[in-house]
Image (cartoon, rainbow, N blue to C red; front, side, top):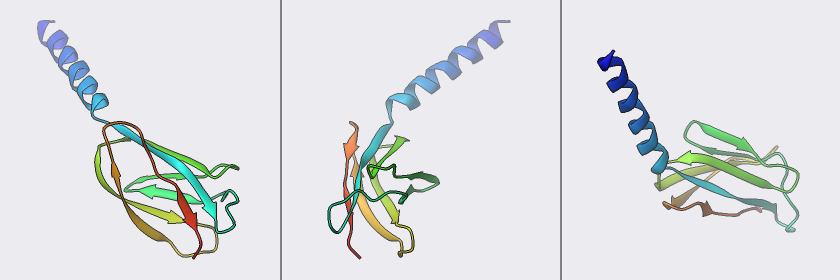
Length: 98
């Protein structure tokens, strides 16, 4: 019983530590004419999200540090950008003019 309790507490502490070391990356993707870019895939590693009707995206639970962000608009080529994700939520907007 003591082992199970100790193991459970250890898992809770590990989960809390990991949660404290994550951040978010969010922002807007806009077309060349500054209109919202809807349906754009924004990917970081294995995480992908799609922009909403306002061109907004948010990728949560990222570890801080330099990230490669891939932006894939419908019927256009993917472009990759380097983005520094800080300990605090980070905002980065993208313009699709390629």
